Length: 150
Image (cartoon, rainbow, N blue to C red; front, top):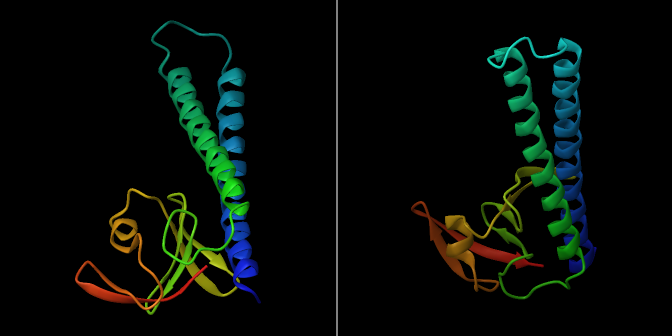
């Protein structure tokens, strides 16, 4: 498998995770709206149940919106070629972990491998940015050597 094929596989797996998150958030948002509608008209302006449902709906709407924004960002990264240095959009394999420098999506799987999608605001991103294969960096007192970038 070429570097570009590996990179596309990582991005597609991350997109699938974000799509799953978006689907769940949309279902929960719709459910909260439906519960509010089923409850009926406002009894009074201090109706705590309806307020709770609307807050829940709004929270899931924000999660849904964030997931969609993440998907759009990842789709934009798909259009970029493979990388030789660590920068936004690169996949980095170290002797300890595998990172996809993109959005803050956390842990996801690519086949039987565990990857971490991390955003540009994380300390790991700051520690590894600009490095190349063979470089070593230290994060949380542990040194890691970059084995592969794509």
